[in-house]
Every structure is written in structure tokens, then in C-alpha cells.
Length: 140
Image (cartoon, rainbow, N blue to C red; front, side, top):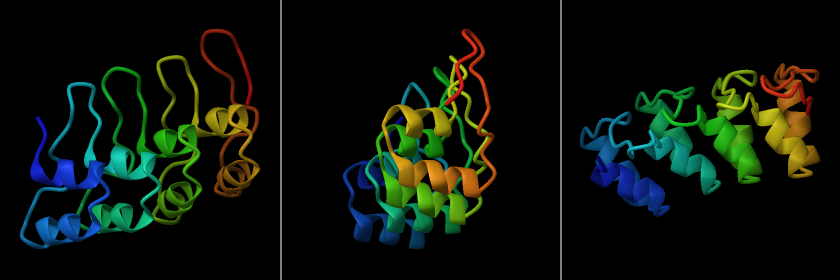
């Protein structure tokens, strides 16, 4: 279910996120039925400050959604959230983790969305440039 922290992160409320975390909110609670966490929403909404707050308070940087296997880094690349991608990578997100149910990695999403800056960030952090999807063998 959704927690106040989840709501604050999904609505880009940086001050509320900071306050809730400082008061002891669990950074890993508040998943939707599909497994989206406050960190997924911060990544989707390109909110690097919220990402940093959540990670510094123990949020799992490489958490995966239940239905489709999206990590916060996948979500950031899918949503063209360059600042979020940079912050997640700087804080230690795995550039090769997060194969979706179709086998798509963050690099696949950056390539399909024509995001050269995100592509470069991912490659510089070790993303496999020749990774292939599971079903049809597509590379980025």
C-alpha cells in the first residue's frame, strides 16, 4: 500500500520526503500493487534530490517491480529522466541490472528514446553495449 512517503515522492514533494525520512519513515515501504516504490517515482519524475534522500536513508537502489522487472534506473531511462539516471549511477545503481520481462535494460530504453546523454552515462558506468533481449535478440 501507499505510505505518506510514497505520496510525497510521487508528487515531487521534496520537503515532505526529507521531513518524513528524518522522522523515521521506512524508505523501502510504500509499494503499489505492481511494486513501484517511492524511488521508482523519484526516478520517473527526474527528482535527483529525492533520489539521494531516499538512498541515503536506506532505499534499495536496485529494487525491481513485480510485474515487469523495472528498476528505478530502468524507469528513469524509460522516462528520459537524465538527472535521475546520473544520480542513480553516481550512487551505485547497477547499469546492467533491471532486465524487464522482455529483457530490456536501461540502455535499451535510452536507445529507443534517442537519449545520447543517457546512453553515454550508462556506457561509462559499464552497461553492456551488446546486451540482447531474451525473446527476440534485439540489441540497444
